[in-house]
Length: 208
Length: 195
Image 1 (cartoon, each protein chain N blue to C red):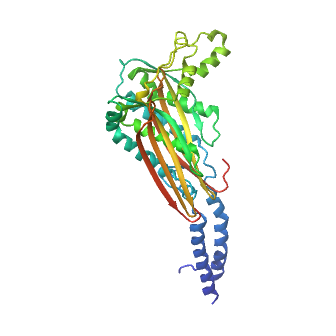
Image 2 (cartoon, helix red, strand yellow):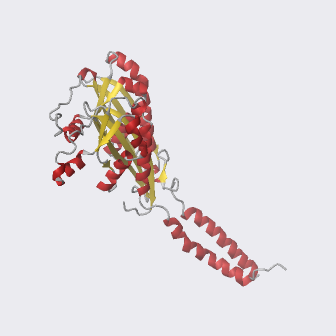
């Protein structure tokens, strides 16, 4: 009788150990031994944050860059007489309720990097630093250099110059959050939108 | 004869097992990172990865020893993260790319040379009177800069930071970005994190 009770207690302890071990140390993904997690992995911290998941930011940048790369020939032929277009970063309008603008700046940087990977895009488009950044680099690297002081920045033909602008919105409802992003190229001379691509994602979760 | 565990031994084991488990559980769970801060290894991996990517880049692909010379000035990394990154860490990341074997080989193979950063040159000229004319022939044509961003997400006690390190080379004459690439990864943490 005593042996049976002891065996029962032992089995119960083993079951409890397994159950607690599986629940108590339910850890988020840790990646490789370095602790880094691949950028494409969705983690628990993201899934429950209520903000756009980084995977969706990456996916949005890929889709927008791909759309622009596909449209580049028709765009330069239609709007720029097949000449190479100069692009710089313009404005980001963040009308979401929670997303920080720096997240969209990351998205914009990534769009540019993806575009620059394509030889075809580089043949048709060149990215330049913002005027403030150009002035900063110029002043830091060339001011005071003998023979280079006072070298002015070349002007850009505004008919072949575009700003990459972004607009971001969200619709927030209980248990649902919708994000809408749109990036567009605006010609500097007349303000015409020569390219536009949007991305929409909706999250449905208890508590939003 | 097979030795048998006595009922008393089994009973003691049954009582001890949960205690042993609960004693070990906190230690096992504590191995999970409590911070998403960039680790030392991240800097090494980022620099070696970016050096390899620059060496294999489209910017250098068609260059050879006879190509027009390129003179690149570097600066410390800009960072827009929630991390505290010291000036030394910012310089380490850039210096380790420039000093890598992959980049040193570029000088001969691709006719590209790296010159002392403007900030360092100004410091040298200020501190060492004999160096007031140093770097007179520096004349950079390009600037190599880097920017680290992070995108932070948290839910309850789970936190994730996506780090993105972008390197770019800009032509100083007109501000054109002639090369850009990035290295991205995430770090996760669980618990009460203090970054």
